[in-house]
Length: 178
View (cartoon, one colour):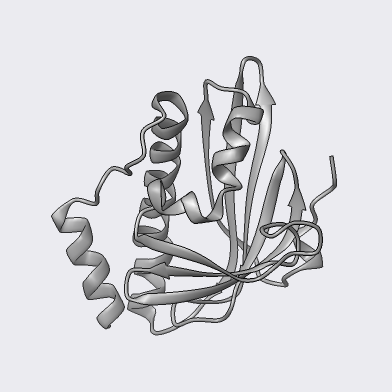
């Protein structure tokens, strides 16, 4: 298991962290989490993911670059840390929501299950309203929904994410237009 140190990749503070205990081994969860193109089946707002640059050892591993269609935005992401089956970290190029972003998804065995933890490091970007909405409403909601969808996918082998409610979708659209 490689040691992850966020300071190696960003100087931004930890802003958000969400965890979920899933009643499955990390060897069952890892192939789903590591399948970037499959993210669209459990990650809210992700329509598709494309490999832009292959990684050092594997297409989707360390050093790869991906584009994620997130609602109306195209997120340009780079995998900066890859430790199969324990987790990976990615950076999002600066965007209107955040700057100096680093996301880290880790899997840790806990008894018969796996604790999956998603941590976000970033500096808020934009006006005060955008900062409050992104840090305290939108991003925590998306992270919680994603982990719940991931759990359902792992436990039931479903291929569809739970859709956003109409109100949540409306809030996201309003947020992107601010």
